[in-house]
Amino acid sequence: MVKALVTGATGFIGRRLLPWLKWPVVLTRDPERARTALTNVELHRWEPEAAPPPAEAFRGVDTVFHLAGESVAAGRWSAARKQRIRDSRVLGTRHLVAALASLK
Image 1 (spheres, rainbow, N blue to C red):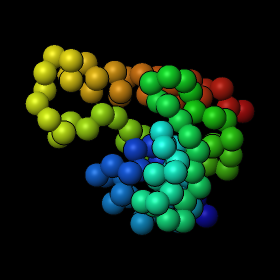
Image 2 (tube, helix red, strand yellow):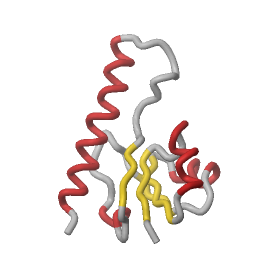
Image 3 (spheres, helix red, strand yellow):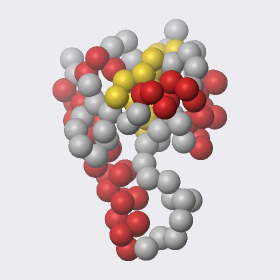
Image 4 (cartoon, rainbow, N blue to C red):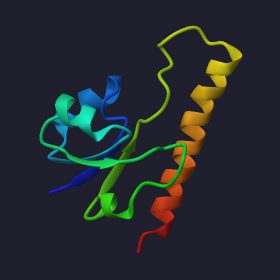
């Protein structure tokens, strides 16, 4: 059975992906909120822009879907908003890759 780690699971695409996965592991900023929105998932707290995700979230994981990032549809794209959109993706990806690189 494939165990898949998903970031951005509570977002537009993530919510549609989860039903297709047999054994999803979700990295989320707010596990309590995610627990009410998602069912049958393993949850781990992660602040994508702050640090790599916890190593225990990757235990047994076969694949990763990285969908986390500031919503691109939630308002006008001011200079500050564009920077938040970019930072949320670039920093989150860097931290995710750092965690993956540190795994055995």
